[in-house]
Image 1 (spheres, rainbow, N blue to C red):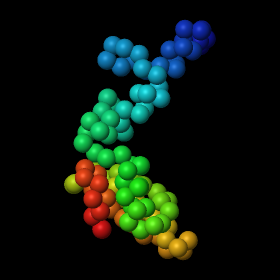
Image 2: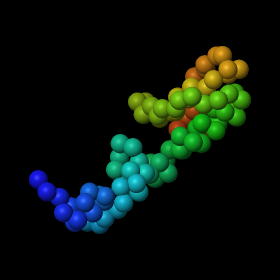
Image 3: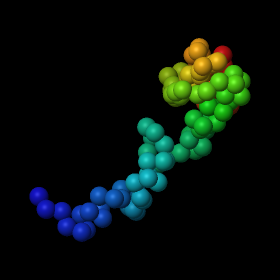
Length: 99
């Protein structure tokens, strides 16, 4: 199958709600719920959760994941003293430490 110039252009955009959005913008609208940003869903960003964990421990953030089962929360793995790994949980709505 041959793709012309128009096909190449169409591959770089996503058709959403009758309009075109660049792929990067469409991807930034929110994980599992297309069209909803983190702010619209009432959740803090993963960057903010990482900052909360860094501030509380003084460690280096290794990994962060959002858990939606039950009350939404971020699980943040932090490296302490270059030796120990600690998991911190941050409330995904308020940003409060749960640990």
